Image (cartoon, rainbow, N blue to C red):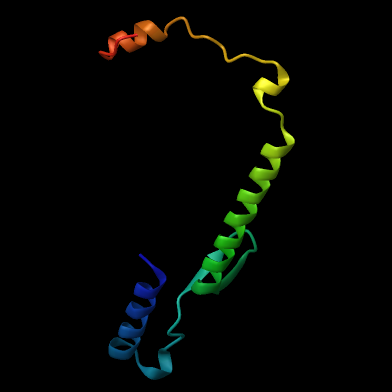
Length: 93
């Protein structure tokens, strides 16, 4: 369920079912387990996007730093069972 749907649900329940003096908020909060804090759901979405971008950047940097198998002179290992596996599943080897 997306944030907008949750916020609409909270606002609808607050407006129709909760007394004004008992309302806490019309906003949705999420728990950020990495930072150990409650944050507004829209802020959490931003954090998740930033973290995903940082992970992607780190992974790309790692790929640039590591030489590939071809660069290291390694060959891909041959599997002697490939023909049997392919024929088992109906493929011609």
